[in-house]
Length: 98
Image 1: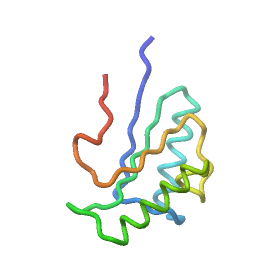
Image 2 (image 1 turned 90 degrees about the horizontal axis):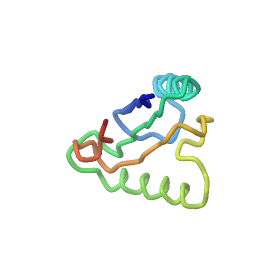
Image 3 (image 1 turned 120 degrees about the vertical axis):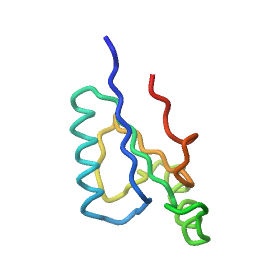
């Protein structure tokens, strides 16, 4: 049996509630409940290089993850949904599909 995988790429990382992002995270939860492996990518910047403020936000989020807190504190993700915080969206950061 083939394991189905889905990657949801958000345009920017926000750690505060945003309606459109909530919809994507709800989709991720629903897909995970169907047995699909879901990865949600959160790029720190949509530009070529993150700003100092964006880097500080990323650092705060990574510290939060290190102490066992969720990357997205305002949404309860299914335990099977993987969230990856990346500096910027480039091809080498995308998960490989097999």
